[in-house]
Image (cartoon, rainbow, N blue to C red; front, side, top):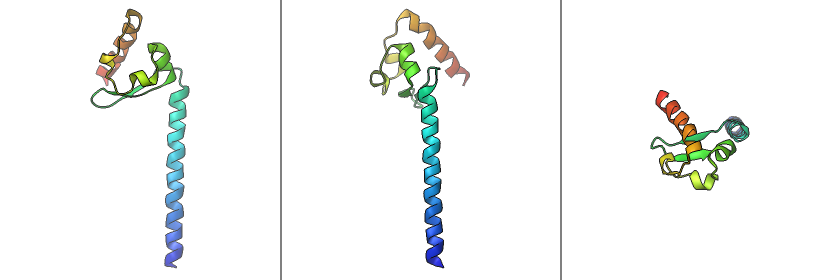
Length: 93
């Protein structure tokens, strides 16, 4: 009986892990397909992720943005308004 219980626990744990993986994949797909520009930063404001819409708006590739603070990224006048909007949202929480 103990072996059966262990098998059930292993299967349940594996099912939970698969469920979590599917949920994470769904969230990632939603971020990637969103028409809205999305960036995810660390608590230190270092860019961790940007979606394709953010790349398009900013005119930079992910590799040029990830690992930098947004203040380190050269911005032209057109993009300055976009960043002002982002900063306002950050201040609001």
